[in-house]
Image 1: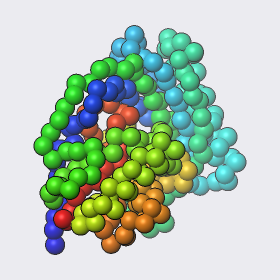
Image 2: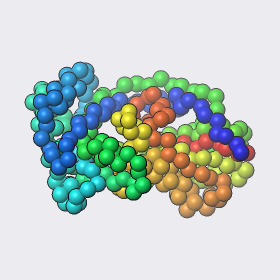
Image 3: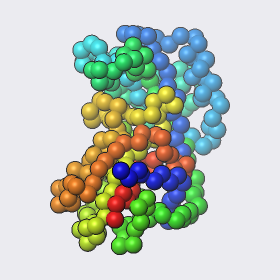
Image 4: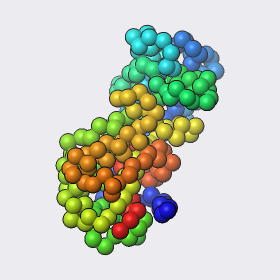
Length: 272
């Protein structure tokens, strides 16, 4: 069986800008939203160690574990987000740059998971998402990396779908993404010999979470769902299912050029 050739995704097409994003998580005890002195110190350290002149915006998202009623969890997650917001403001951050304070309720998990207690403890948290002002990116072009489908591909070529980007926490295709996929589908119909894997990617999750939460399903399968969304759309456009597979790679293959570009989907040629 053919094994997929891995190429480090350190590339970009065109002159673009990328927005750097940093995430810090604050964890809570079961059913609690109070913040201990140690956690306050941790938040203050995180805020004061960044370059405040470059901060463009801050978003705060609260979560709960999968137990309890839905309404209760939404209220608790909101209380946690509000509590963290208050401590950030107390540490000297101007409230006007905090653009989102949102409780997202519970995080659903698989029924047969082994380390249930540990996973639940990691889901009782608030994520502080700092976005920094855009910095210019140099044009980088590497062999085997393309922005469109061609007749001359070889196995292992990557087709970076530069216009198939996603909103934070979302696997929904935007109108612009669908227009780009329409163009891609027309090319794939021309070159019917090409088979490929659709690879989904995410950004900005904590190191111990290789995958991110899909805000639509509440499950930690965001990169998989992004890849599947592209797969389903191409099936809708009459691309043969036998030519395609899809897989989520979480945050394991960052491009190194900003958060926006890590919310992406790529096609990797597996057979010609």
